[in-house]
Amino acid sequence: MANAHDVQKHEPHEPLGRYLLIYVCILILAAAQFFIAFTHIDAEAMFARMLFVAIAEAILALLFFMHLWAEKRGFLLFVVVFTGFVILVMQFGWTDSHRMEAGAPYSQSKSGTVAP
Image (tube, rainbow, N blue to C red):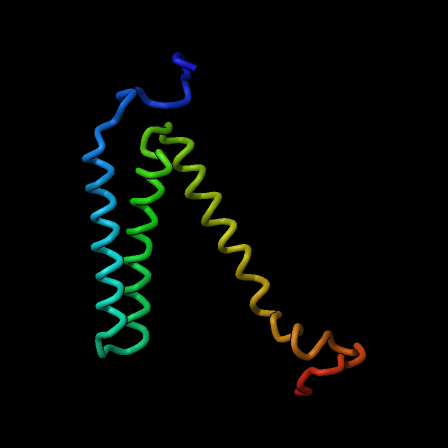
């Protein structure tokens, strides 16, 4: 595996300081989320700020702790596009989630459910 062509060349033993720095950055971002949660702002602004910080944390964790920064850029792009596609496709089920509670139209009602 020494001549693998699917990863970029990097040091065999990467410095521990880099990982500690990334870990501290993720801890700081987690603390920022904690403080954002206790600020008195409207729900939309809080959602936007929390989402931005969570995405930044996820990017740091994926790039450094899962070593995606060492992969080819094409594979990294594939991971980003594929993950985005999966998340978007998963959202189609939420529009029909009321059927879990009330059942499908023209079906027999389930016991223990709330009638609409």
